[in-house]
Image (cartoon, rainbow, N blue to C red; front, side, top):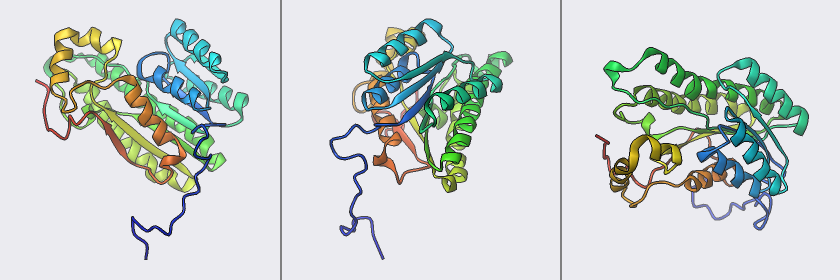
Length: 272
């Protein structure tokens, strides 16, 4: 019988201790043009991956493609609506035609609308759910079909601690991220036999340009004060977690929801 601290086990040290963690890998990043997605794309490129980036922001897509090329990695970048299955299938087919495979998918594209539950517009509910949950399903399905053929692959879904608590003004966002968490566990269970791992990252509040615009300076200070580690997450905090889950360092981890929140959830503090 083996146990967790059995020192007879020898790690295979895939890729070598000094090698880049994603050397030779092909990674697809949704919502990869700015914020968390951009940071993940650049981190993966520096670790040896070639990239496929999709977003709805043409100028930002062009910028990130240039940055990735400057790191001497290949990139396929295109404006794609993650809520449209035809566009998704066309894009993933192009990625496979270009690179011959898909090793990693990071589902990151999201849309947020804030309003009180009693006043939340139906059309905004539909848009949040379409981008932030349906998009994960469509991209996850397209990537997993290719990964199943390869008998190997790795999906990282960007969820949120909002999927575990009720964040005021965020009913659709909370529902979508709760859905992402449940979907992650289902995907991990069903795809394991095909050699595909599926995990999620649940960030707390991340210090991005978009968040600063939405909550303002006072809102940022209030949220920072509620984090036990004393600061908000930076995009690189999420990118490092994604790198870990996407790498061979996590090759026996699937169905896991990794909180990257500075201890926010451990302190059981609710935003009011």
